[in-house]
Length: 181
Image (tube, one colour):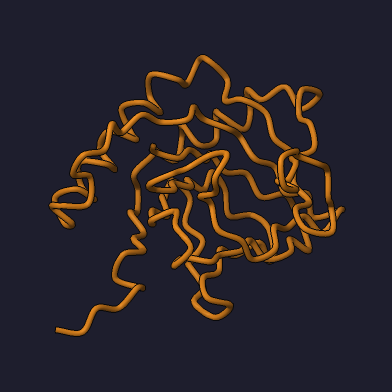
């Protein structure tokens, strides 16, 4: 049996209600966003040539909805890959609202999500809008994920799954991310 890495990348459509997505954006305090950082050895630094995105914790008003949504995602992924979570504690890292600004060509160059200082098992990114140009999720420098409001991209966080968010050229891209440990 041939194993294809793409099989472990899942797009779960309509995982989060479109109205909830719209309200998360509407209820956001945009003054609280800060520039995201990247890991540079033992420290983290702002490196907009690598990761040009703003972040803030998800509005607490949506914490319970997100927790339930992530639970549904993990159940679905675990049913398809029944040994994937064996021995894992399955704690999430909390929920971050990411903002990729088109006016700044927001993007995140190819990277992986698990590293020594923050080992992660699975990555989850939920798209809150699609009224922007560019900003596609891309694996292996060629496999593009379709932009759908309320959809979740779910994949292992390890070195086998290099991915990027391509530059946003118009509008703003909003997403919620979390990782499972």
